[in-house]
Amino acid sequence: GTNVPTGSGFIPTAGPPATIVSTGSKVGPTASPIVKRRKGKEIMEESDTPKKKKLQEQIDAQVARELEEQQEREDMRMNEQIARDAEVARIYAEEEIHGMIDSLDKSNETVAKYLQEYQQFASDLSLEKKIYLISDLVKYQEHYKKVYKFQSQQRKPMS
Image (tube, rainbow, N blue to C red):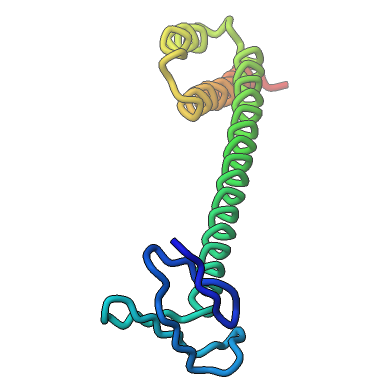
């Protein structure tokens, strides 16, 4: 192939030199089309504008890719943060449950029986279910204490 000089540089050709017919006097960024004649066929070729357009498209695609990658990295960081926060919340909830269990009156038969059953299934339960069940037990115990207190007050002789 040979390079054919034009007003704005060279056009590489694959075969023998083609005849160049320039329609503008000086070829600049907004050049008019250059017509190449090869074997009787006319090929229209915009000189600069398609190259610029193509380059701009490549730059746009690159920028879009970089933005997508940046977004993916931020999403990953966000998901990692959410996972860490969830783990911290889970640990606090577990500690809360243990605190509630420790506060229970294990001398109360019903509480002790319920707690024993709870502990058999605890590993299979979700955190929400554990909190729900232990909260119920705490409520039961508080209610039981009130009833017990009321009953013991009723038994006292009036002075």
